[in-house]
Image (cartoon, rainbow, N blue to C red; front, side, top):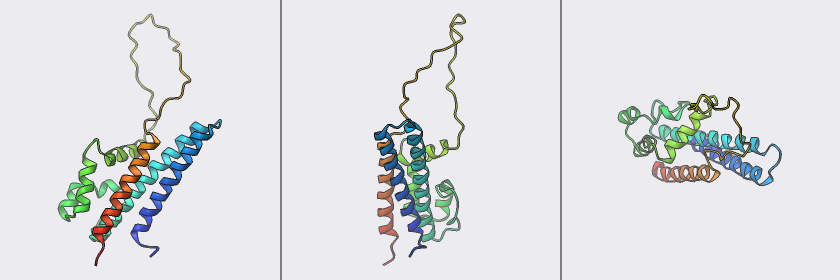
Length: 172
């Protein structure tokens, strides 16, 4: 049982939950390094949610015995060409969700990709050459792009999909 594909999905979902709990604790504690802890746990949650998605894709691909059952990236299975070669309703639903830019799955995939991007300073064009060369900087905390509530929602959505898919993937 321990080597079943679903165990990896469950493990990653659990790790994402742990990261979100640690992030909530860091927000509540407000230590000197709280912002760093919050950012680290937020990134860990995204990483583990992506791992859970990949695990779910592995479950589906393993059940249908797809040749891509052991790929290292979920995007390789969330491809319409894979679906055309071996149709499955679960994979079709995931591909449809990933293709909709506003869906939670597309946002999760985009958030995961941003983990590997270097930081970029926003570009601001100077309009007046008489403007000061030294700009004032605000030390106020910037609200993160992803809230904990949004990450928890993604976790619940993914958990719901996994439970629903497992009901249909079970052989009687």
